[in-house]
Length: 334
Image (cartoon, rainbow, N blue to C red; front, side):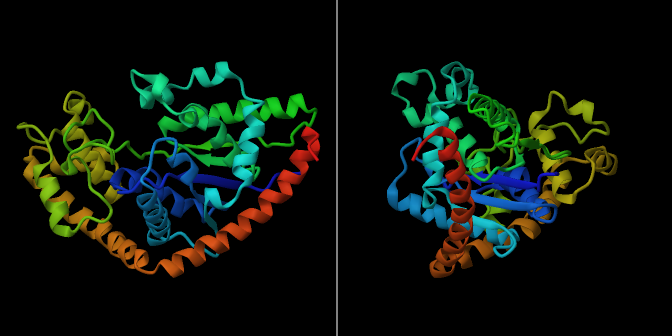
């Protein structure tokens, strides 16, 4: 019997969603909802692995929900909710903590990156949060997970945990082994100030990124100030290998236009980057500003956002409790 496809994806509510989030994940969600059943989760428990101001966290949960709706996710077709509203995530995470191995977590490179040089001061939550991510996915028996390069390792751990649970408790195929959904032809969006670093909300300079709520004037100003170099636009992508900032802007433009970068280079070969920046600004304003406007409108209607989250919670809770009942029986819990 074939298993019904179900995709799970989560976004942390840490504020200031930006162009990297939009091109790297959110636009993919819109396409994905047309292909299979989807659960889109505001993963607020993941967010608190590092300290969050409580008032800001609540606002960011609403903002992330608003972004889901603003880009075109259908609240009736999909399950949209916040993670902490379904306690099964935390319950299953504990069970999986007892299945997962310390050696597996020690290999997680993202913890090393986020904890920095003084990992002894990092929270336990930051260390074990890949197990919570596994619980998020397995709680609903998700078959597919959209992942970027920085999350592939965590999904591999989730697959290992699922296989070990099935084997330890002699419950073959209880948890499906989730498959990664890796977007093709979508580039990592890099900082507008340093083409070797990923665009990030944590970078100090606002000029390093395009935020989804930026105005048209802010977008134009940021692109105008974006770092490039003095050489003209080349005709071949390989000529951009040592020009990361130039490559970044061209890839962003190609992604927005849904056009292969080589075609963009053929059309713009020999032109100065001021020409590209004007084109890129126009494209960004046309794409991002309507999304930002919708996000702002939705944030002002918190009653509606609460209604969406509550409806999603009820749907998620039904699925979660059905699976948890079986999990408790398998593990031997009353």
